[in-house]
Length: 125
Image 1 (cartoon, rainbow, N blue to C red):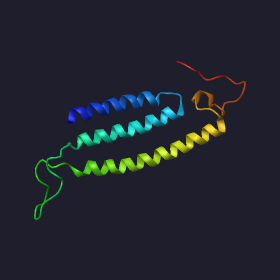
Image 2: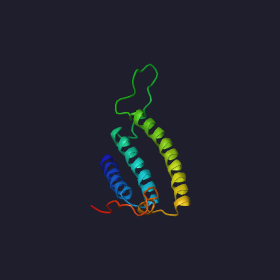
Image 3: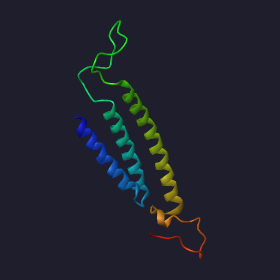
């Protein structure tokens, strides 16, 4: 099962990088969300998936049972989900305001800080 989730995380990374390299703001935002989910899956796989033994220490034990899931990655993922959602909401509002003021979703058309009639930046390499 770990190999399948690790492969899914790789697919998420690939799709996220593809979306982040796009010129449209909405695609970039979806790429950011997908990148956050890929990192969360990677942390989950690093913490060993398993439903056999819960991460609970019994009475008098100083550590959980052998083979128990590590609760630290799960706590990190929960925190990352909350932070990722807040970041997505902020970036979504920022992209919406940029679209309202510039009337463009394409980043190449959002060049209002460049002077008119001046030298144009390179559009390709």
